[in-house]
Every structure is written in structure tokens, then in C-alpha cells.
Length: 145
Image 1 (cartoon, one colour):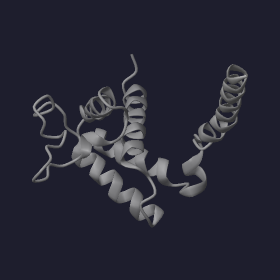
Image 2 (cartoon, helix red, strand yellow):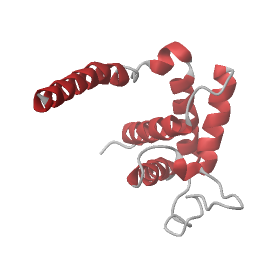
Image 3 (cartoon, one colour):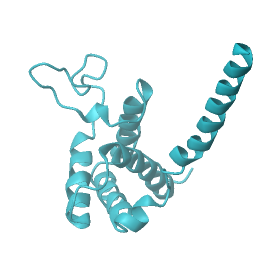
Image 4 (tube, helix red, strand yellow):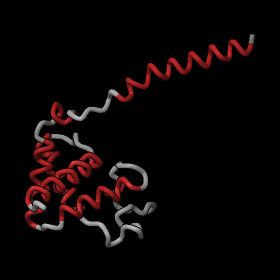
């Protein structure tokens, strides 16, 4: 009798988890910023384009910055964290010291997107991902193989 009850409980738990999983996944949307702040993505692209026009190597730097953010703990924007009295941020951590750049471009993007959207709606992790995507696109278009 105890075995049957354990199996029933296991079946119930698996069924409940299966029902909840799609609801969690459904919260992500590739069109999120289109409804929340339609000018967010064009603004990121504009700032990235200007940065690449001013410094042609910046496209590669933004892609590298995104890689460094994603490589260890996932794409969470942690590479942008500054040091505090009790914490060494990834910017100045030994593996990244003097090897990544583009922080000033990300700061400009964040400031401009917050101004355009009239609030802080775009995460720094998303800014890094979109800036890396746009930098590859811009460099590919302006410098065909």
C-alpha cells in the first residue's frame, strides 16, 4: 500500500511540475521591448554605431565584453559591476584586468535608453547582449568579406 501511495505522489508531483514549466518559460519574449519601450533597441543600435564609427575596434570589444560576461556564470551583466570595499568586481578581477573594454559605451547606452524610455526598463545584461549583436551586424555590413 505504501508503494502505491509513493507512486501516486510521484506521479502527482511530476504532473504538477509539467503544468508549471510552460508558465515559467512563457514569461520570456523576444518582443518584450517592442511593447515596453519601442525605441530601446534602435537607441542601442544608434549608440553602438556611433561608437564603432568613432573607434572601429569597438565592435570587437563589445562582443568580447559580452563573452566575458556570459562565460562563467551566464549572461547576467556581472562583468559591469564595480568594486566595493568588500567585493572585487569583474572589471578589475585579474583575468579581466586590462583585457576588456567598452564599459564607457555600455554606460552611454544605458543612460540614453533610460532617457528615451523615461525609466530604467532595459537590463544591463540585455544591453550587453543587444550591443554585441548590433556590433557584429554593423561591422559585417560596413566591412563585407
